[in-house]
Length: 588
Image 1 (cartoon, rainbow, N blue to C red):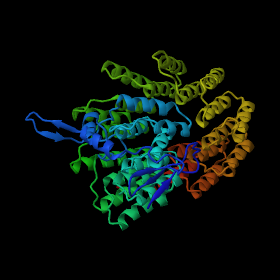
Image 2: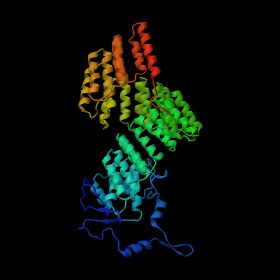
Image 3: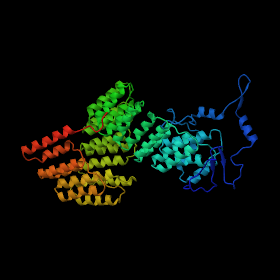
Image 4: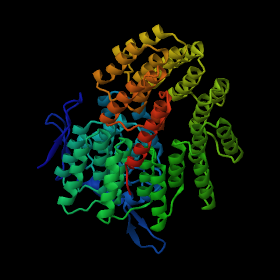
């Protein structure tokens, strides 16, 4: 007889319940009265009679109350669970008054033992299971992982219900989101021990959990286990894998998995292509995104609005506003009405291209077309003005965000801070930081880097160094990243303090970070200003040997170090060889 006991990490004041999976009966410790949660024969008979009725022809008939309640209430018991949606077949869970009360209680509660005790005391009714599961799915829609665990583990370890696959899947998903892999795996093992058959969604959620935690070898193990058990991974499973890799920014691995899908003749769908367009877009390979898009149409797969938005975003990241606008217009010709995400993507394209007025026009068009701007729309507008050095306009957009009743987030403050930092308005930057603290938000590394940049541009190096020292001690909770040291290398290099610059560059490796193309180029730029051409070439060779590929900015800086035509020819030859040897990182 299989028994699953409640985990030891929950402090439960009442006697512990045990679930007997083989008989689906609830047993309590011997001290508890055996008649709790059980029924006599006559009671069961009466409950059965409650499901009887006389039809219009006068014939006595019976019905299953649970089936009726599911049909009427839109519950999801026994209907499976569509991965990644939080609801089934596109229908959101319909909460009964009882389910609504349970949801509000669970959301407010923090004491697991008290929540479990209250759930124990709910009168047992034929639709209670539907209510409980609907509550759990609604919590998932709200991304409230702790309450999901509380509710689903009450089903698992305490209730008289026999958990089904949806309960296990919800728990695996919640633990995966919290990156508690050992607990996600223990739920998977409990699922198998309870003779509950895992679905594609189960494997998809495990894959996503491993990818979120960066455990790619274990994610591959899930695929291998499926294949060993004679279950070929479907598009659902592979899409979950690609989604996890995309969020973990493991782009090369995502391309490898996509190639494997095609090799195994796994039928790709709209979601697959959309994910790959996003993968190439985030890897700054917009033309590869376009190739995937064209391949999708050639294979007869119809793009949806998410696909078009992903492609607009791919061009937007590189500031290719004309290409982004072409895709936007094609989307409209295909009969799809742009939503706020599509408009935001087009605004981002103009922002990255350095055309804040273009972003502003798209914002106005969105409002004119009856599409309500969201917080991200205002953030993009703040960023667009900030990138162009229009700090007053950025400030106005930030204030409008507050006037329309939206609360500025960390990113909102960060973008405003960056705008004022670029304009050298240090006093306003300090005010924004004070506002941020007052709002109860803790500045992240990006915000602190913007403050560092403001101090550096204003020549307040002592303030800059004090802030860096605080970040290295993690006084504010945010640790320095490569962007932090890029600011230091750039500021010291521009000020001509080469010793300090080299010390900042050395600190990169000392803190376990890897210098990127910005770090190397800033370092070369410091010597280029001194016209130390030989030293610039030496650093360039170090850069290539370190595996960091130069970009156009590096070539421009190298040319700036030249003092005669011979050196210009030498740099030109280097740039040409770089261009000739350049390889696309991701191939189709």
